[in-house]
Length: 194
Length: 300
Ligand code: SF4
Image (tube, rainbow over all chains, first blue to last red; front, top):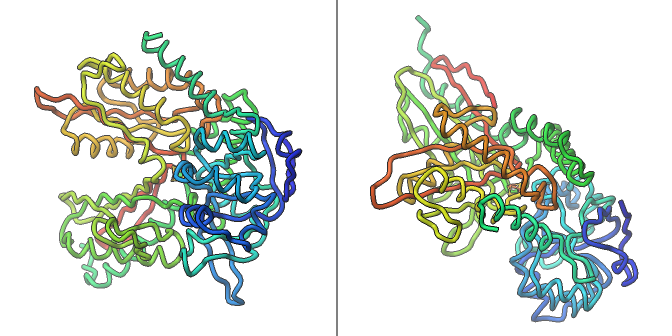
């Protein structure tokens, strides 16, 4: 188990390898489809403050506004990452992002960008909404709330010991490829098609 | 004879009970599912797979204690309603829709329903075809409502095969069915939030096949198929799928499936469909039994 404290430098990311368990602490920002499209077509200096050396989290949270105007996250699990595959490599390159959190893994373009720019894909446990919300200590703010709407907005989160697994590292290795290949060989053996 | 309770009173009570049914289903996993996750944890020897399964069990405890959803994707809401006199489908539909609105307001459900043309989120989850209800008449006077919440991630990895399928060497027999199911589990990898359960239908048309495959997911994980040949296939799939090494979340491990339930419906001579619905580990279902006097009981 490795502890990561944000922001990350290149060396810290290069030290990560597929299959590693990590616990993440510090400030990260959420982003889904609208955010990725926006970042690819606009320079966003405010988002840049959180993205450089930071982590972008594919998450459509359930957020509650408290009486004093602050926000609380009641469910904060990851959402499927492949939807961002067309944009992710550019966001990694342009904004010097060091980590992407989501679920389901991503494709070859992202894997290549991770290798070239020193970034890692960190897989959170899908469905772990209640537990992950507990690791979000504070919602510090939100960008593009009006424009993107609550689930798509970019939430700035203070997290502590947020659990994830490195499934795509900065050395071109993907756990998803390994599991798919090995399970595929076992499947073909079971079907007598080896 | 029990004095009849006035219908409006009963309706009010039923609506409250329906909200409670949604809360239970959304925030607590059924005991058979928890048991399966716990047993799986004991059987794993990869530490990462073990700790992942433990986190899943712990998450559902935290969700229930905090009255928050187990998973933030609160899923397609599938209601099976069995009813007798004096209930009518129209009134029951209205009650269920009201209960969904209220459960969303209370945060048991996320605003999780999108208009398919405009892409707008329907913030109270009530829209064309949402929630969806199936009605069944019963002979006595009670109402029984079952709710299943089917997440989007796992729904996306469902698959339908039209046999024969040369790609996987599947012919029109149970051996062909076996090949389809194993292929579907492999295709899904961890993307449906493994470990999951598969509901399968052999036969039917494309529509009724998928409908029956979902109906199979009402069976508890312990339930044995009444047909010995199909029961043997279910067991075999469980064994074989769990040698694939996909594991929790697709990170590797012995636990890929926690359930395999196969149903059959008649087919035409011209077609042979195998429909597979995948249910993630956040396998949410619950049941409300509502007696004619308004007393009720929720179970899972
Ligand atoms: S597949 Fe299931 S556990 Fe995973 S995110 Fe969807 S509803 Fe939640």
